[in-house]
Image 1 (cartoon, rainbow, N blue to C red):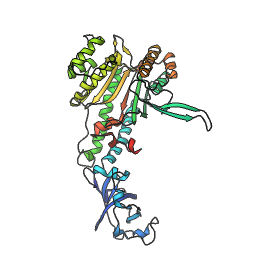
Image 2: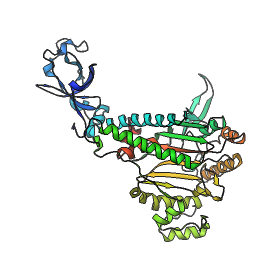
Image 3: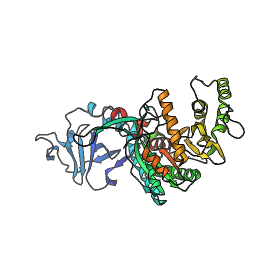
Image 4: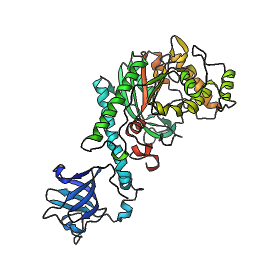
Length: 450
């Protein structure tokens, strides 16, 4: 069924005089109801409208304008409305929501609205960083090393070097981080990347194997500078989406049925404080040092958190955080979790004053993780050690072991400036701000339709 919930019904008199093309939904005595430019529009018939036979795309003897049928492609011009093409498929097939047209029309045009708001969000991102003197950089989608962390399941690809060259094995990137930090070594100081990233084994309401990642970095900056950027970007994006939904529409919900959500003042907690506040689990001493492994296992078992025989400190802490903290964050708007235990440092540096903690932060909006950032680790020897630990852990679990990015380590060895950076999921940000319930709603072609 085609509905008009939240979709503007525009009168042709208010439209641009240039010819418009749309899909006929139904035809009445006073005009045609058409899906065009993301809205259900009413196109009145001129006193002397074109006939269907005036279209060179229709065979001679085609039906007159008065016989426009649902599914016809029609054009509005200064002289009237004419049929451009009558598809061979019937209306039921044309408007079936399994097809691309039917999917965009379904639910009051919700997915079309999401595509418009995605374009708006991307423009806002670029404008935000351009105003602050950042340089947009392009990084490879295919790389030697995709990232070695245990939770990553990279996508392997095989290519030929030249028409008859040898086969080489590469991976689709899980993040542009290595390449961005190599550019920091190259002398760039403020950069951002808007690119696709790929992770196998990730599909759900908030996950698609191919997704849009925004990363940005500041050389010589602390993590707090990146957090200030992040807060400002989220407010700017929410404001732009709010103004767009309200412009000439009378209501801000659009096809989603609710207004844009605007992030407020953040709640800021350390990793261990969040575990204690939301999970009732005291996993560290007063200085933030993680409890000995045996004591940690006992504390988690008492709280009912699953403990497996092969779990190390990092696995136990991450499990407790996922089970007890993340579900409780939905009622707290914006939440910033920092710092983190060193066992979950990822690519973050140790805190100078407390090396058992990592200069890492995660940001949650309405309970959804949208960003993961670091005061970046630039110590080549420590980075190599962490890579080797990751590879041993992957081998112990029988997981693929991609190669270490030696050029990345070389850049660190030759000097990468102290810096801070963050990775932000663009699809998730659009979902949270716009009120969308599933990532498929904000993608033109989710994995199953790609």
